[in-house]
Figure (tube, rainbow, N blue to C red):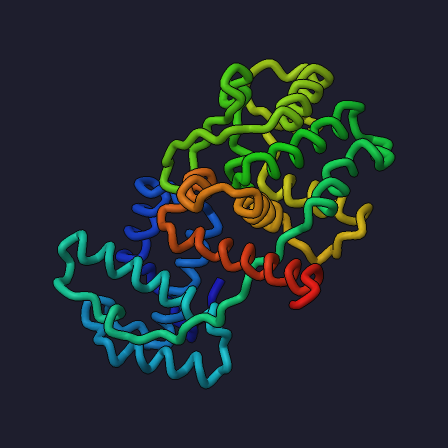
Length: 303
């Protein structure tokens, strides 16, 4: 309970309405909702609770200056303003104002960083780990097979963590060798799957007696979470020569880069990853070019 002399912060009805719209109509993840709510709360506190509909571009320039003074990372600044700009687009769509003051603020550009990817040899090392490593004593006998199926499908399809965790048995089509995925904004796409991944899934399903419902289950036979998949990847990284700092998302990066290395066109990789914009996928072409340059420098006698 707050002390008598402390003001109780009022609920922000516009922000609540915005978050409800993101959750229900846009199918935003809990992580996105939390990030946007936090960003808007911090901005509102800096503006001393000035009404959103009365804010001007200079108010947000002042907040940008405040973040720069605090030496906030450029990525953090852009994340804060991403929430703000999405919020104002929502307000405009709801006819609550006619212009977006946040759009007039020029943000610092991100320093380009190429995504880290695993080599094919490192991927083979990771994929074989579940069947090499001694299983935990309390774990069911089928759990290493499940972990192998998780890693194989993760790399074979390039799915996001949430997409992988959300799969049902019915989403895997053995006849067409593909999986049906519902990505961001409930957009459906179909991704081809390689035979090693399909065979790993079949072995796991037979051992765990998974015939319907969630594809990947835990010891309680409930759907595993995205965090559980994150922990699976992190666990087996410890039994490889790969640095433990490598995040599970690097498997998605590796999938895209290896596809381009072997001649896949950019549009196909974009569709497989579920990217709305081609520019998001183009970062992987830079990775491929850098890898080619390195190979050239190491192999060509006149490099």
